[in-house]
Length: 275
Image (cartoon, rainbow, N blue to C red; front, side, top):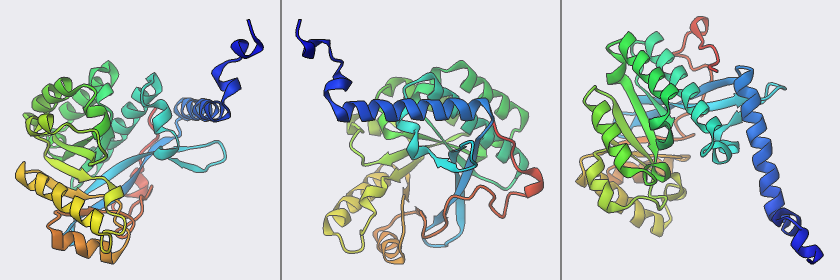
């Protein structure tokens, strides 16, 4: 046996070692934040393209590290999505979202989830209890399912959506266009909202390639009678192109950064962190 054969892949490959170390750090961060109740939502408005009025808010999961620094989902979600911690993060996001809906009767809110949480008993229990305690919650709740996770269990997602849509819950397909959706399945899902991946929005006022792709994605949404939302809108020029292209709603820093204490949420009733 050679010395090389005794080495682990991470010993041989510095990139693999770095990725593994990053994932370990992310798992530890999430585990500690959940244990210490340092998990909460930041809220970002989604506005009507023609009216400029807020159509709904998206609740984005955030962690706070021991120093008080806010950690966005992009720093940890890929590392935990396929683990038990990913399911616990989804539970925390849903609990916070349902609490916000219960406390603000005028609020319409979207909450992110992975399709893997559909069969997770605790997540389903939180959802059922939340919908049972207030008959208006279902009509004001939007569940955003990522395109990537949807395609891993399409039949399960379709059945799940059909059941909850009959109870009034709205569904959004998140990050559409990122390259995971089979169009054979898309026409069978009946998503209510199509959220177009922000990668196609960047510079769309001048990027001919993005303009072509956005036109096609908006057309797909219209064909399947889905409400279309453009993500990651950062400039007035991007927004104007999207309005002219027929988008229904816009979301991004041009309209507001995610806020942990938005004006519509009374500080006296600020949500407690979910475990």
